[in-house]
Length: 234
Ligand SMILES: Nc1ncnc2c1ncn2[C@@H]1O[C@H](COP(=O)(O)OP(=O)(O)OP(=O)(O)O)[C@@H](O)[C@H]1O
Ligand SMILES: [Mg+2]
Image (cartoon, rainbow, N blue to C red; front, top):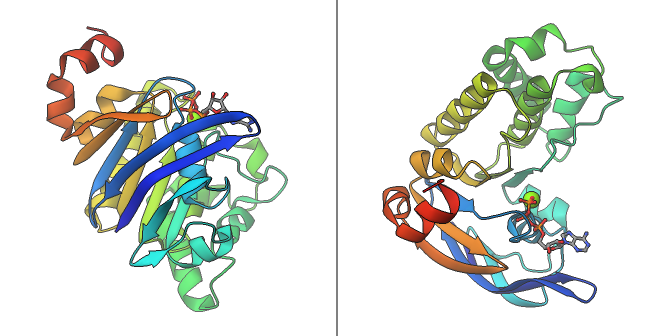
């Protein structure tokens, strides 16, 4: 479904990704793990068209999306739930959800999707008129997830969805992400919580200093000596 080949990206004089390749097959939950600064967010930003490619290619659903503008990538069915949630703080919960569907013209279907998200996240339904900036961190994460789903993506990318959340909310967030995969939406998940990500994924890639150094099933990576020492606390 998504195929990244030899992708090079950077910021000014800094090269953040030194020619990475990865693949996400339809229906899978694929994890991308790595330390701070490894290039995980840059990878997701480049796939969504927010960071330009210096070399390499990105194919999504049979289409070459390297160099394509972000709205067209979203319209092709690839949504991005960014690091730090990035809800629009002064807009209401409902307006934030509707922003996720801004490219859609099927208004009645959009309303039905919004209702589905409200039934999945009752806290959001109760707060639908409330400014998003007044929500708790966990509620903002639910809103960011809901907003990403409002585009009806084929593939959704999550950047550190558990960051800064209380342990019980982290568990809930991971359960929701598994459910999204189980409902047929393909997922690319970036996580600091390497064990949780490896435990729930179908396949995983390890990024170190802008290079993919290892890939395999979650179980293979959990069993790997280097992964255990560097990412799973021995
Ligand atoms: N806007 C930017 N301008 C300059 N350099 C940047 C920018 N964003 C990221 N970088 C650099 O690119 C490299 C990769 O950063 P990136 O944010 O992709 O890492 P990450 O794996 O997501 O890290 P984290 O786990 O901290 O979120 C880092 O060296 C970082 O300093
Ligand atoms: Mg990051």
